[in-house]
Image 1: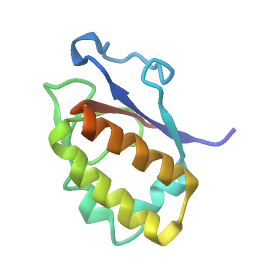
Image 2 (image 1 turned 120 degrees about the horizontal axis):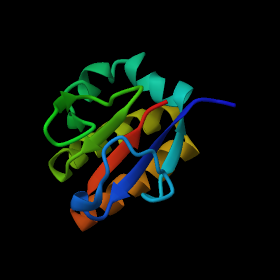
Image 3 (image 1 turned 60 degrees about the horizontal axis):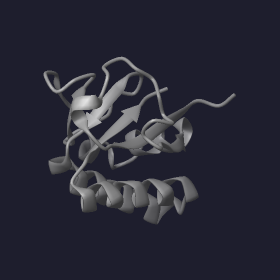
Image 4 (image 1 turned 90 degrees about the horizontal axis):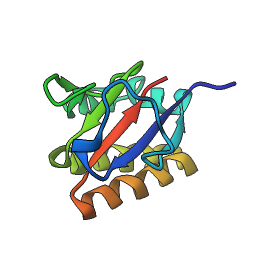
Length: 119
């Protein structure tokens, strides 16, 4: 089975449970690990490393996505994240990235946090 990453929208941050792996709860979109790693292996690495996020909970500020854990992406970082994925997808033209773009855009419209489950 291939490794991958799940991205979802947290409707109510107060109901988020730390360390819980539940992609269905957040209606997650799946992105293959090899595809997401293209961000880190290309000239987009410095952009993703500027992404303001949190690891596991809102008391642990972070930059980028936690490849092997849970990352929380605040609404204030979603436009930056969207721009990165749009640029990457212009190069790779991926259905998985297109679905992620839709998910990020939806979170922006709703002013919601996103969750990322690493591999």
